[in-house]
Length: 547
Image 1: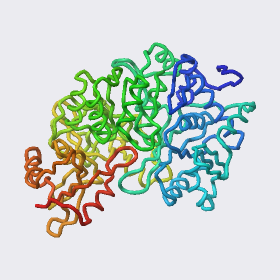
Image 2: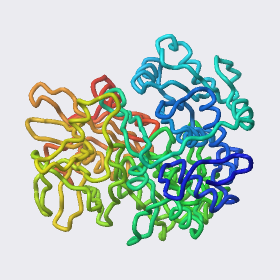
Image 3: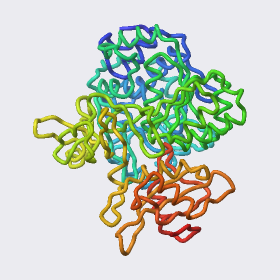
Image 4: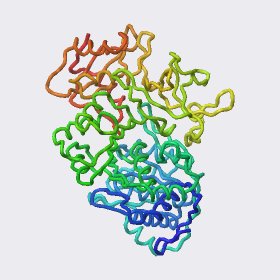
């Protein structure tokens, strides 16, 4: 038990729930800065106390342990306050994409069985139009976003002010409590990935030195936080997606400071200004889409951001070109290129032997490349297999036993695996080369082409800023490789030049047969490739470089 003013939080030293871990860290470093989000700045004690108020409000509003509370918001301090508060009430937060239209919101809120919603007023307006189709949704809390929208629900700050007078006891939390992450994608409606909180902490959030054993209690996590020299991470990804959320939670549970990007449109200039002003030491981004423009901005003002020592990326691999740009700005910059996913947690980091063609990652012992019989391939095998993890993996997909069986199969020896959806090969030294997603693989004349491999090569051309590779219909081959690219400057490379560049690194069947040029390659809110958009572009008429 610990006392936080007049609040009593029921956590124990062995509690490895996310809420319990925050409480332990807040006890150890109460006055340390935890969160910067726009004009708001919260110490660990303040963040912890506000999470407790959220929990009390939800419990007093009738939210029961195990019930689901959706969060629909842009990046802001209240997103994290609310998530920790929901966990503290022993309920389950549901991350909802703020880009969703009514049909998508209806699907996620119904599929997740959400009984409550914490949402920005303008975003809640869309939910209000479909609320008659959401019979389980019985409680709404509204975040002020300056839009003047009213809506049917209780104001967030009013709810917390009322909760300050509540004496309702908080339930005891546990590492067995549920962590549920809805993952949208390129192939259909999102799925809810169910984790035990203790497991997601160990495979995605825990920070520890090499050779240090995993923490066995909240007390150990708190002790490490107290000894840590706090870093400052600028989180650019939306916290409603795994990359942004996991980086933010990882920093908070290690006693460091999270600086949230609260801009609704990514601006390299404003991002560098924020990083400089807040003396950021780490920038979290999602691949080249963020890393390249940031590097160009820093190169234009090389004296900015002297505290910045590390670039951390995940979600999609960085290209060699992006790495070179960052090292041109600061040769000593540490670059972390992480590999993982919603179904696997963080699996490994990029090898130093990256080239324009290969993306090799050094993986943990629980990660393997499996053949069709779910048997790990030996190092040095030239066979392509599915990248998978065993050990601490999700319980499955919420409300979807069929997809659970497909993604989390059991092998002949009874060992359960989580399939990442990616394909790869394993080198003689044990590193894994990432080829791409099985869902987006292109079958052209019987040959399989993994789009990410072709994208990585295209993006090493100096005149190409970004690229997405997709399948387009082909009468003779069934499918042909088609690229959608944006240019890095005013120069437009020729048909022959782009293809010759690709031939230096790729087999002939992998070379794009059509290339469409757009002003800007569209990506998701998390910075990942928007394959559905690119497929439409590949099929539409427009400027084309064709063979």
